[in-house]
Length: 81
Image (tube, rainbow, N blue to C red; front, side, top):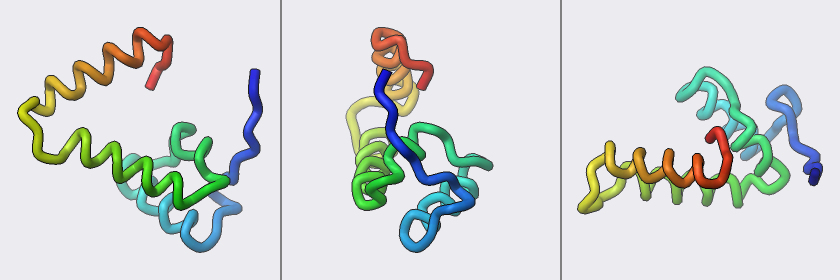
């Protein structure tokens, strides 16, 4: 299994700290899906923007349909996210 050194929330500073703070504000914690990208806060921010655009932006699909697709893909990839 691969290992990526991540930045724990208590050790984050600058841009990463602000991303982590926003995550805690939204979800009450910093999930591992965010932590795994912590070595590159710009990539993490871009990933979050992509997610928000896909899940909340204009689309012919409803939010329920988008979430259903995400669940099916996660299931097919054996990923609990």
